[in-house]
Image 1 (tube, rainbow, N blue to C red):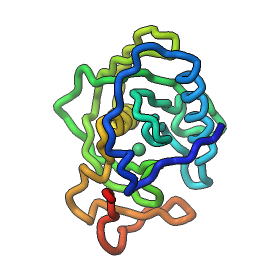
Image 2: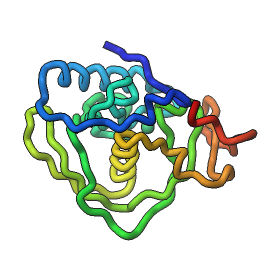
Image 3: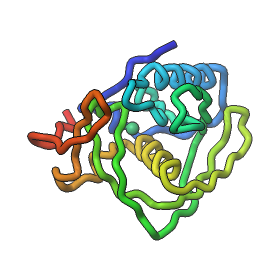
Length: 182
Ligand SMILES: [Zn+2]
């Protein structure tokens, strides 16, 4: 079932998510709902890359990540339980990112180029991922959500904020930095 997205400045986004001890049917259903909600959000100009449970108001360490960030017709996702970064590169890279909880606003954020992530799948099996570039960025963004952090928190200068038009083209955001907290 499609869920309502929590957006800024809702303080729910500041909650710290708790570890999941046991994956029951309710959590499996939640993962399924999160995938449906992300696909439903897809626009002509972009597709949703991932979603953290807090973005539908559930403070638990669950995220769903798209398997193919380029192909909008590919609706396969990977569900990750209790993801954590166990190792990262010293090198960071700067790129534009957005968030389903921050409608219409994009920003340039520095992220680690490479991360090693430890998590579990919905069957409780340990999963280890070695990620580089955009997928590494996505996981850092999702794990931030579990700690109550929004990508805008990383942006110090208004020149790194953008808005997107219907054609998917970015332009500098006019006006003040959006209100992140109530
Ligand atoms: Zn986000």
